[in-house]
Image (cartoon, rainbow, N blue to C red; front, side):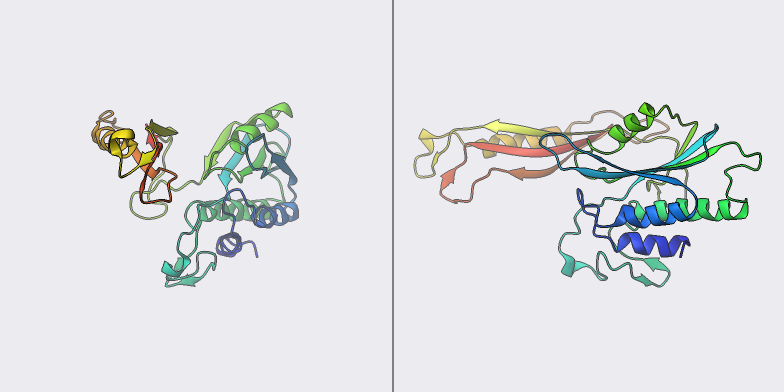
Length: 268
């Protein structure tokens, strides 16, 4: 089946938590191959990172070239028992599709693929009636994590083939209330980092011989979180810094840690 819901359900049922593909790209490869696309599966990696599977598919060889971009990887589901429907069940109830990635962004990919396949079927398998034009899909498996073996490398790979895009549609969710309630022409930047505070490890019974980094990093987290970065603009909301995890790497309750770390992300 190549309707949007069937494709979305098949994708959601693939537990493609980064860096795993779990068959998600295979679902798209089969559909696009059948629709006449030339499909490439490309794996990228570098030292210290996991290898990532990516997909590039194109039909047509001439300009103008429209590409649909997206990612099939998802964030971890967390406590699966807390889900009313399984995170990888692809269950449909009361008009809603449930599962990790249903919105971000397997649903968007499914709609794009279904629309293009239907368009080609209605137009003799050609991107345009005059035989010109190209349509492609550029789908990565590395968006939700460190994002080094996905879009950037896939763009470089496509450029090395001498290909260029004239237009791009990205089905990433950016809606205010419900899916599809707005179209956006840009998005804020993203920068992740880690804050380190070094101390001196020691026993809690002798605090004068140690330096506890926990109070210091706590004060820094509060101060940085309270800092107003800017006021935004008419097109974009204000920049924000959010701390996402704090860790001291210390399993013992009677040991003052030697270091504290806090991960953060800035949207600007």
